[in-house]
Amino acid sequence: MSASAAKRYRTETRLVHAGTLRSSFGETSEALFLTQGYVYDTALSAERRFKNEEPGYQYSRFSNPTVTMFETRMAALEGAQAARATATGMAAVTTALMGQLRAGDHVVAAKALFGSCRYVVEDHCPRYGIASTLVDGTDLDQWRNAVRPNTKTFFLESPTNPTLEVIDIKAVAEIAHAAGATLVVDNVFSTPLYQRPLELGADCVVYSATKHIDGQGRCLGGVILASEDFIQTHIHTLIRQTGPSLSPFNAWVLLKGLETLAVRVQRQTDTAATVAVALAEHPKVARLIYPGRPDHPQAEVARRQMRAGSTLVAFEIKGGKAAAFRFQDALKLVKISNNLGDAKSLITHPATTTHQRLTPAARAELGITDGLVRLSCGLEHPDDLVEDLVTALAVG
Ligand SMILES: Cc1ncc(COP(=O)(O)O)c(C=O)c1O
Image 1: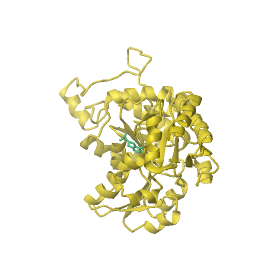
Image 2: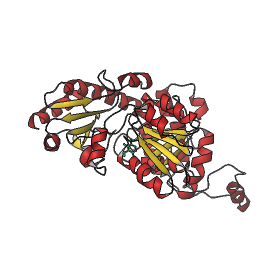
Image 3: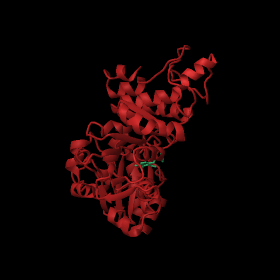
Image 4: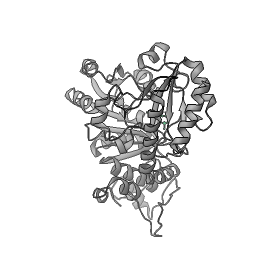
């Protein structure tokens, strides 16, 4: 089903059918085209394909039918004109930023970013003569004041990793556009089901497909979604020539992941809300952050731009690092892992893992205390999960 045909159907239907390219064998499940290259009937045909005078595949670094199916399904889901898949979420972030930026340009980003994303903005960009400014993403004046004549793009994630801050995407997009800049949004934590940054004014959306899109902890992947013009101008040639491309095998796994995305994420979000209720008033929990709750610091923005909460809950355990470690070690069902979006519930201690690269002062500024843990809710029964967490808190 083409992306335009998919438009008349609802999200769940698009997740199952959009982008399917059925071969002459009539297979029900999407075919896995595990091939590096493609053969041409004649030398003239090869020449014409390289000149873009004839449609068809040339080499799987450029494109591959299974990868095309994944890209088309993602574009239909997000309501984007075009998509390009990448080997990892970080390849998607790096390509979306570096594809737009040149030496002498300036990028503004929210400082509450996943550790590697912050590395790209703070350390990688300046190595290539691109200046960067980090701002408090929830303070719109800081975005406005950071603008320089050479500002080319803004970058943010919302909700943020790991403190689940919610940034007003529509307002930041307006500031970016008034400055002649674009806005790139990393939408991993909300998923395409619950937040549509392009509809809110963003120019480009990126995902780590490694997370909810696979959803079963199997493979890495990423995707960049934008207008056809944005993809052609900034992304297409960079991916084709430098090769952060997605493998067809991983594209196939991710396609199967998309079929069940809606049921999984809905169930995981409901579970996260249940966990938040169970832990919010717990005597060993100093602070609990969940975007679906009225006590969330940006509850009003979350209500406006997110259709539901999140599959993640962050909470601070009284007693700092030692108590947080004792709590994690006492968990039986929930596994210790820096990953998220999996069918298995996973717990992370950001200060010593995903955000350990930051200085203690930078962590403090972001609210990443030594007692903070981030829980990614899986598909277990919510009561089993709550029991596991409450039992471990009694030990910690
Ligand atoms: C918000 C966010 N963006 C990007 C990434 C990077 O994705 P990947 O690990 O697939 O490169 C991650 C997690 O790893 C993440 O949590």
